[in-house]
Amino acid sequence: MNAKLSYKQGDLTAQAVDAIVNAANTSLLGGGGVDGAIHRKGGRAILDDCLKIVARQGGCKVGEAVITTAGNLPAKHVIHTVGPVWSGGQKSEPNLLRNAYYNSLKLAVENGLKTVAFPNISTGIYRFPKKIAAKIAIQTTNEFLDSEEGQSLEKVIFICFDEENLLIYREAFNDCLPTQQSLF
Image (cartoon, rainbow, N blue to C red; front, side, top):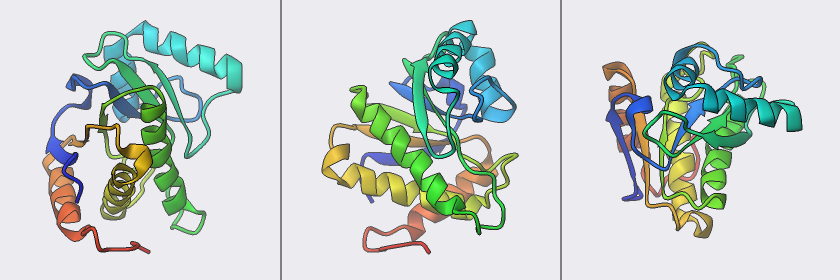
């Protein structure tokens, strides 16, 4: 496991990192869960940036990522990514979730960012099974950090909102050994 990768329980909106990642919806206009909390605590500047992105490209597709200011948050930026809605795993949901993590990390590197904090993407109202999602998140991020492309990142942390997710990430970290080739 890459030493730059960790997890902890906490409030994503309180992280003083270069970027927090928002589990956004395709409209980028805020919603429930972590998305709503980021928009509420970050203030109008985040929505204003999102509206500019919507005007330019019509939102954000599932698996893609865009970047905005962090407004009033202690982070410098918010990377908004859209994870898939779980439909039993038959509609490329694992690949779409991998893309959400990969494209968020790629966008961080492209913007010269060094530290990134992720929530549990797609595991709330999008119903992605939490244990599978955690393994995808860890494996994708670990592979990115080990690649030449990911060398400039200094720290990636998964912020688990509650104890249930903290325990899931602890177990997933133990299961995701560097020698493991694939989860599926």
